[in-house]
Image: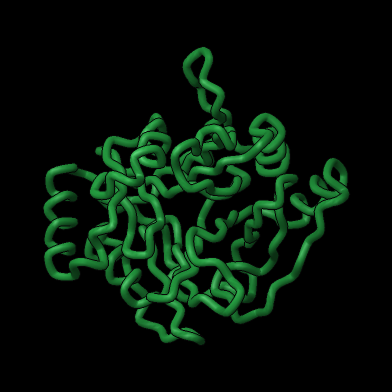
Length: 267
């Protein structure tokens, strides 16, 4: 594939706790390298997850994702030709993945990297390997899903997966990870706190749901109450939980210690 979704980032006030959670519950490899400000990097063998410290004025949560491409110049040419209003920003060299950042037509920011790019370091230079628990999809809610899906197909050559008749969502694959694009409607949040169009959740596939749940309960027992903030445990979040549960990929919905939503299914 021309492009692969190799990067995600969460902004957190508890990077160490988040790193321990993804290591202990999902088996992600945690980097031993110290990063500025206490940032932590974990990886599932294919996708790297940066846990970046929250700074004043910056919202916590699932912040952005990123592509590794064969040639960044091809991306620039496609964006400039079809989406001339989109600006491209070169990032400081201290980022382990992002050499470049830009955004889609809805303003969702993503990072861009290329194999061999000089800033790449840490777990992002490790060879890919199959892991029993891995990132399977990234979900995005937008006002114009057809337009945004066309952007990612055009710029990154993502493959549109088949879907049932009447399904309003788009499912775009890089061969390993799926970008699920859902329509955002304010009426979906009736009876709940309203969330803006943005990245929605992270999806994981696990080798065994019983084994995964056992590891999750073990983590919760050792770290309660901070970890026990899953949507199904809080009746006030019933509306949001039901909206989240509509994702066709998931079997089990939960959140990480910082409240980032996670959809889990058995491989």
